[in-house]
Length: 341
Ligand SMILES: *Cc1c(COP(=O)(O)O)cnc(C)c1O
Ligand code: SF4
Image (cartoon, rainbow, N blue to C red; front, side, top):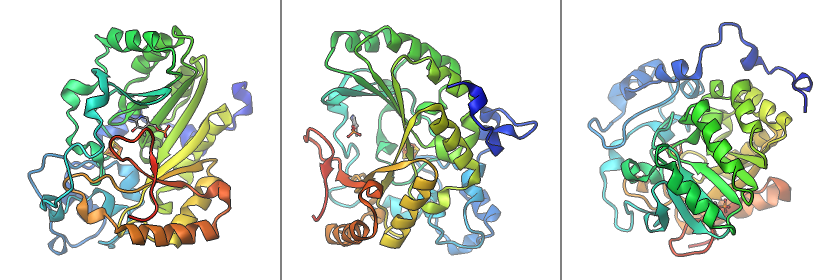
C-alpha cells in the first residue's frame, strides 16, 4: 500500500512532536506524584514504598484517569497498594510455569508452531497484576549479541512458523534493534508470521511512528499486533489514531484483556470495551483469567463470578466481538478455556 493512501492521524501529525523516548522519560515514577496529578488525597490511599516491582506510568495513561476518583479503573491497575504484600496460598512467583520452557536465553517454546521471544524486561507502565513481575529478565532476554543462539534454534525448528515478540514490552526496544531482528527472521523461510504483543501501542501512542511501520514493513511475512487494553477508558482519539495507522498499513490487530476485580468485572464494562475496540479496528481476542501470581491476589475473582460475567457477555455481544475467556494452566498445550472454577 502506498503511503499516500494512509490518512495522517492527528497525533502523528502534531508539529514539534517529541521522540517517544523523550515522552517516555517524562513518565510518572512516584505514585504520590501521580495521585497529586489526579487530585486524589494521598491520606486516603495506602501504598507500599520500597518495592521489588517499581512504579511506572506514562503521562498519556495518567491523563485518562478520572480526576479525584481514587477508585478509577485505570488508576487501580497501576497503584501499588499494601495488598501486594499479602502472601496468599496458591499465588506463586512463576505462575505460568514458563521458565522450564526457555530453550535458549530469551526464547520460550511452550506451544506448537509458535515461540515467544522476550526482548527486554522493560515496560512503559507497570501493571500491578502482571505475571511477569517476578520473571528473571537478567538471564532471560534475547541478548542481541548472543542472538545467534535464538536464530539457530529457530532455523533448526522448521515446525515453528510464528515468532511472538513479548517482554516486558517488545516496543521498548529501539527501531534499529527491531530492524536487525526482522532482517534475521527474514533469513528463516519457515517463519511466516511476526506477532507483537505490546501495551505501548495503547499507553504510549507516540511509539507508533512511520519509522516503526517502515521497520515492520521490512518483514517478509504477515505482521500481527496484539494490544493489551482492559477498560474502555483506555481508548481515546490519540491511540485510535495509532491503531488506524497500523490497520491501514495492513496489520491485523487483536486485543487481550485480563479480567480484574474492581477494574473491569462487569458485563457492561466489557461490552463497551468490545465496542470501543471494534471502532478502533481491533478484534477482541482473549479475556484472561488472572494468573495466580504472588502479590496480585486482590485482583482475582472467584470462578463462578467469572462464569456469570462471561455468560452475560455472550448474550450481549455478536460472536465476533466476544473474546475467548482463557487461563494459562501450567502443563497444558495451549491457553485453556476457563469458565467456572
Ligand atoms: C500465550 C502464549 C503464546 C501464544 O498463545 P496463542 O494462543 O497463540 O495466543 C505462546 N507462547 C507462550 C509461552 C504463551 O504463554
Ligand atoms: S508485561 Fe505487560 S502486563 Fe506486565 S507490566 Fe509490562 S505492560 Fe504491564
